[in-house]
Image (cartoon, rainbow, N blue to C red; front, side, top):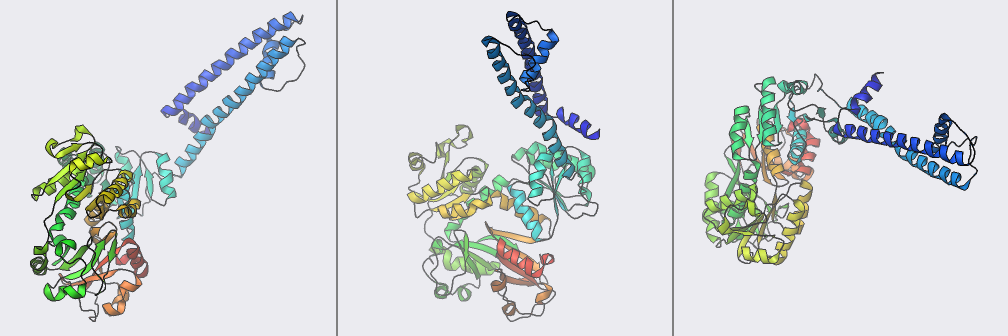
Length: 565
């Protein structure tokens, strides 16, 4: 009985089921009309043949013929009657093929499947879970964040409003819970009061609703939300948000930094205590084609060359290897050492030309504002006239057309920033611009991480995405792992010295060979040494600053345990 009640409830629960119910009613009425019509024609044809039958017999014969049973106890003898029998038989067969399967699938099979999925989908987190991160969807930002959380041994919970959306996430291995966003009971069942963080990246209005509802249940839990518009930032804070991220603006400014870095100066991108991490363009330093042994950075500046980032890969150049012109130095040192680097190499920078920005959305506008703030020239291409903010500097048209690119100044620019949100478009434009200008610097945006490598192959020198920026920022707010993203797929992180390495030297541990992680610095007592002694034994008070891509980080985690991160 409970099963039948559940099915009946599911029939009228959704708009689609109510629409199917109306369609079934129309099919039923059509069947009744055909039954009545065929019964009348049966009476008339039988009377022409001299046979007399009751109306009950007429309905009986029509049912038997339409259902293809064909008992043969009542038959026509004329050709007209037999042709009529064929028409009734064909009509009945069509209805059997349509009406019965439709009714069974829509009102029994699908509701049973939905009920089974709903029964298998969690609607409450286990009582023992705590210290987890609650998410309101699983988009690109959350995928990047979950990977970082998993590396740090932190649980997550994705709340989805419908059971149908939960099934594929469960199959993919994510921890999911079903519940409406505007119901405080959803967050009680998600044990949000015991969570470390709530992160919501939905629309601004929905984020405000989520924040306000969570605050009713857990007044103290940190809440991080994204905001599309400037006006939403203050509203989200008023609703109770701990941190509001405008990822479009952040991504645009980060992409502009890659352009501005072409002046040869070392630009600081992060800090671990007193150790600064900076990047500097190889070409603008005047060192392209030279080798590290020729330059001797340590003697001249004291900075450590962590590596050279070149089109999606970190190079560890041998002393005699020529430095690539399109590469980017990743440097580690203190403030004085970076100042000495600028004195030695920044003066060699050539004049930087204009920047061509493709896409006038939030990311493109933020990139333009950042370049403008530095006093650099720029132009912009935007396809939608309604999004044009600077008509005097904007070419309205499709960047896939050569005439539009030439009008915007592709022949005279030194950098191209591609900011559209569609990865396919960005790959196309990166390939096209690289063919037109083999010497130009190209910075491209990626929405999905799987397209990063493709964008590099298409010709982009650097690829950046708001998902990696957002995931890293949220992870850092947990203060479990101090992570600094150098580029897409490459980051620095600080960990306590694993117990397996205590008493060993860096040379003996050989982490670069065993895990792929490179030790950049060793910290102790609030001081980070950017040029650690490779023969100095590691102690329980020391910390390691490591440079790694995600596969290397995974190998480190597998070797030393999740607790090490």
